[in-house]
Structure formats: C-alpha cells, structure tokens
Length: 229
Image (cartoon, rainbow, N blue to C red):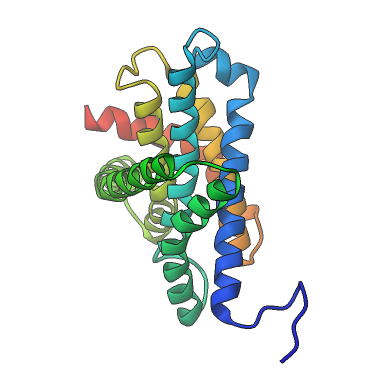
C-alpha cells in the first residue's frame, strides 16, 4: 500500500506519532506555566540559581507527562473497551516518545537516562498517591452530603489531577508548602486546564461537564488536605 506524509502504514506508527504529540503537548503546557510572571514570582524563579530553576521546570514537565499517562489509564474514560485498552498501552509509550523528542534536541545520553529515572519515579509516586487521594475525597464527600453515584464519578474523574497537582506542588516547594497556597492554586489551575483539554480530546466529547467540575476542584482539594491533617 502506498503511503504519504499523512498516512501511516500501521497502528504502531499511529501510536508512536500520537505519543509524540502528547509528549510535546506536555512540554508546551509546562513551559507555558513556567513563563507565567505570577508563577515565576511565587516560585521565586528569579531568585534561584540555574540548577534550581531547571529542577522546577523539570518537575512541571514530568507532572504534565505523568498526568497524561494516568489519564490514558483511567478506568472511567468514556470510550469503547477496545479503545480503552489501546489508550492504556499508549500510556506506556509516552515516556519513550518524550525521550526521543529530547534526543532530537541534542540532549546527551546521560541526561536522557536521568529523565527516564525521574519520570518512572514520579509515575510510581503519583499513581500510588491516587489511592490516598481517592479515599480522602470519598470520606469528605460522604461526610458532607452523602456519597451518591454522581459524587463517585466526580471523585474518580479528578483523582489523577489531584494526585499530580499535590505531588508536583510538594516537589516544587521541596516539602515546605507553608504559606504557599497561591502557588498551589496557580499550579493546580494550569494542570486542570491541561487535564480538561486532554481528557476532552481523548473522549471526543464536549467540554461542558468537565468545565463545571473545575469550578469545585480547588475547594475539594483543600477539604481533602484539611481532612488528612
């Protein structure tokens, strides 16, 4: 079969291209936040040395990458069963696609290995943290007004975002989060916009239900944090 630039010979090629696009989208989202003047002030970017600045950028990039991976693996995605299995497999290709992208930019092998380790470490951490986030959210939701199917659905949908946002903020602050709520809100807002955009694309649906959920997300997260104290 003849092909051209817009036609792929196999599903594997399509998956590779999709994973590459998702990886570049994650990089774009991270750098958009890092260029935000308010974020730079709240994260003390200008007062930090180059090593610390790079560390913060790396955490933002990895947070977006892992958020995509957790989204693609989410059991509540509104897609057909076969496509859901395809997306779960695609999730595993995102880190390699990102590393390949860095390779095209001339990043050296040692640095690529460091990136690979960081992505794997944060993925394991944020995937593990999902369980605690879900349990806390369910406890708070049921204590407030009772837990119904709508509440369960909302919790399940937001768990990947909650876990990544909290973890990313913790790492940006090196664990010292006292008095840095504004930085958390800004990071959360950026990640939530990215999450909504990616989820809508994956599900091929409308943005309205997810947009409504963003309106209650910040309050929910603070209730979860208070409940865990």
